Image (cartoon, rainbow, N blue to C red):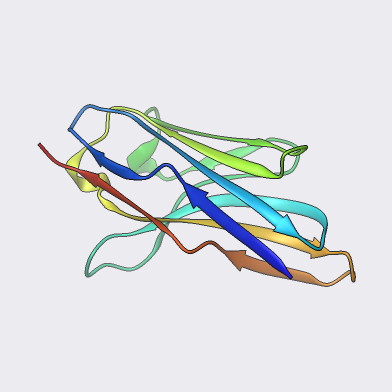
Length: 120
């Protein structure tokens, strides 16, 4: 059994910063790609940023230059540093990971989501 648990969401003023964390636990053999996605009210879920096991990153155009994704493989944790936040960044942020389990099954997993609200 594998779990992804996010933390770090909250309410922040425009221009502020937040750092999200997502820790994976359970019967994990190896974690491949990890990423952050978000879903605003009434909109489809969209990719925010992804990071490969080797550290290669990919960002949505809307967050380039403001958000930074990183990971600590030893801690099985992925981070999202969010700076210069805008009201349009308000959404539920979800962690995602491609994981090979100890049983050698490859599955894609989602966290439960954490709310980020950017408002004055």
